Image 1 (spheres, rainbow, N blue to C red):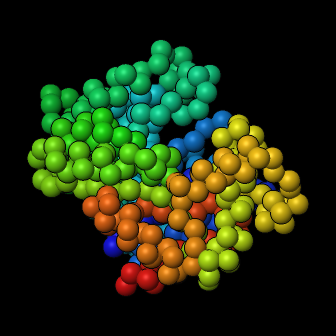
Image 2 (cartoon, rainbow, N blue to C red):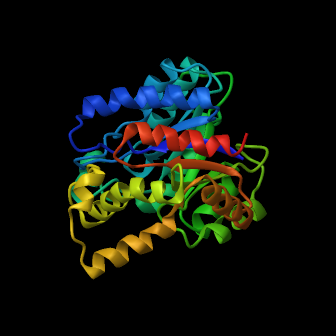
Length: 322
């Protein structure tokens, strides 16, 4: 089993953005010592509590403060940007940190239509152009075509497309690039998507298929301890879905709340996007899911309030798969 982190830099209440950024560097250094392979950053805009808005900058910060950890984006919002500019940024990172750059891109608008338009400098929605932009990005990164992006590095960064179903998997396979399935967003299409990717992969940017899946995991000392920790993530995710305060509430705050039946049902349904439990339960469920997906390469999200407990969760996970 191979593990990395996908960090949205979810901001706990009572913490500033500056404190979250500083803590993120410490977490990355810690998981590198534990044996994690990679540390990826999401791209979110227009939120109160998701600090990761510029994955390229966070990749540089983490790579500068670690020794071997691969750094990645999960993912850059390619439809809103120039493929040439994105390629130039990624190649600049590759020149600074050879063999450590994992470029993940996706077709999300990045927020509301107003946010999307601001990111794209007022240009019309270009989500339908994602396949063409992705193909162009692959060419630029692979030093192909009459116009080449700079700097012209010896090797290209690894390139991944993020997706939630068979269509996105088939696109990544057709281009011969890596694929990351977002189980933490849609837990229902992973088996079909990853099977499609493996079966239709054509040698291109990569010689062999490179598949990963991203999932929420909270691993406590026991099942009960994990449940205690996870209620802050449950409440946070519910708030995000409702468009409310996207900072992570404390366990004490969550326990003081009363949930209506609709909220309780929504929280329960969201648990399908997660694995919550003590080491034995997490190991068993992750092995079952890995077998279903035929994927043993995972990016983990853990958006709980307590940063120390988050690190302990990461430690418990990797210690189960030495």
